[in-house]
Amino acid sequence: MTQALPPLLDDDQAAFISGGVSISAAACRSGGLPSMARATGCRIAADRRSITILLSATASAGLIDDVRRNGAIAVVFSLPADHRTLQFKGGDARVVPLEPGDEALAERYVDAFAGGLEPLGYPTQVIRCVLACRPDDLTAISFTPSAAFLQTPGPDAGNALRSGA
Amino acid sequence: MKIKLDAIRACLDGAIPGTIATCSPDGTPNMAYLSQVQYVDAGHVALSYQFFNTTRRNILANPHARVAVIDPETGAHYRLSLQYLRTEQEGPLFEKMKAKLAGIASHSGMAGVFRLLGSDIYRVLDIERVPGAVLPPPPPRANLLAALRASAEQLCLCSDLDSLLVQTLTCLEIHFDIHHAMVLMLDAPNARLYTVASRGYTQSGVGSEIALGEGVIGVAAREGTPIRIGHFAAEYSYTLAIRDNLQRSGLAPQLETEIPLPGLPGSRSQLAVPIRAGQRVLGILYVESPQDLRFGYDDEDALVSLAGGLGAAIQLLQHASAETAERGASVSPAAEPGSAPAAGPILEVRHYAENDSIFLDGRYLIKGVAGAILWALLNDFAAGGRIAFSNRELRLDPRIRLPDISDNLEARLILLGRRLVEHQAPIRIDKTGRGCFKLHIGRPLALLHIPHGG
Image 1: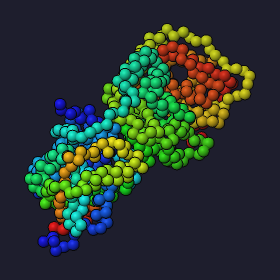
Image 2: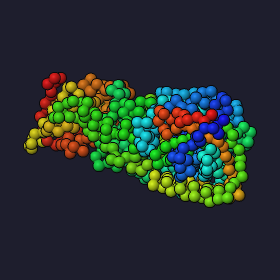
Image 3: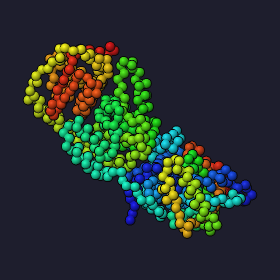
Image 4: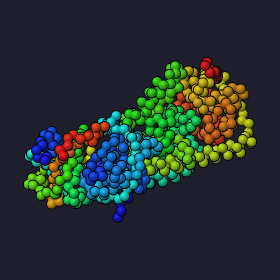
């Protein structure tokens, strides 16, 4: 079982994905169209064995529906400043209750992400608008990462970093 | 209400990168960033294929994909449901995307990493507006339709090619707020474009040339498609192209016949639009700006429409001028012969047969067809004092060797006339009516012909 292995996520990756990076998730229905949504924050379990992303339930309705059906998820994290990009996949994604502090976490995330975009000349007001989420609309999806991929643009993009499966 | 693809094209210019979700046959989702989402037509988009990655593997096995794009001004967020159809690895769409990608790559520090392998064409099955707040859109910079209409009305009034070109550049300035523009005509047999009019540069650059396929202008002419870049891209930059040309020519410095292309230093947005007559490309209307992402899809549409009118007008004027010249030729009154002033310093006119280049007192003036025209005019003048000429006889003159019967002789004459003025030469050609003009000589001439290898 994966429990016997060290966690897939190392310290550096954990710091990276919980920083001011762009977060997008995909799910799918077998044979059907994939679904997708932007996330507005990420929290990592103390043992680094699970990743929880925060999303707007309204804007992510299709993704949540697919996750509920089969638990498959892919989440990509990218830092606009240097294009460093990591993708984590899991097969046990589920909608979980919010934890205390999640609302504040989402707010801090938006500040960190927008703050990193400002010097790059991105329209940060627009980004804040896209990521804005009413507190009562915030929801959380949690999964155990079972595979990690480097996706920084280039010929190595897509290479598996390690598979925990 | 169904959202139409052409209503959300502002989201496709890459100011905020899009994302693509795909799904493998075993049901594993994948998410990736997109460098480029290109509007193809009302029902299709093309995505850049740069690496053989998971996205690529997935769409080849399961053609369904979803793409998220965001309006860079309002934050409106859309999801497109797509079905992969095919990949194009050459042709107009591919070249369009390749040029745009070069700009995106250099802007994002990815020059040398991003390389277009293909344009993946997708059918747009559905567009969904993602619920969420939006910002009010900024006021539009200009009403492009009104600008187009005003320009079309003014271009209709032009009765010769020269005023048509001048008016086009004026309309771009006044109605489109575009201050750096040029018109180049295609010399198809020689696979080159020559600048015939420009606006907004320190040097007019009239007479400068670009090889077919070189930079945004050369690629637009070769592919017969608009090419639009939103950021500086070294591989499409003309400062480099010119330097390379200079190195390649290998001519002795005194024979250097390169007129620098005007070009804007620090140009960031560039748009080259073919000017057509039917299927045939006559030339290129080129605009540029020091601003990033200055020209969007709507600007491209407007200039394609403007260039359409311009192409039709050029063709009409060319026919009209040919007809008038034909009718007039039989009744053309023998103009009084002219003579050069007897006094004053002699102007040495040197003609190199090799490339029909003309040097006035050792300074390069012009080459090619326009050079051959001037040489023929000056020889006729020297032989019998002739000063009145018609376009029709020039068209048939074996000394001039027009590269193509459809060649725009008027454009060559405009080019010659402008070069003489810019050169402050004591030689001028002035239009005296439709299809005829007069030669003015202000100094005694010494004509010197240098044959091939001379």
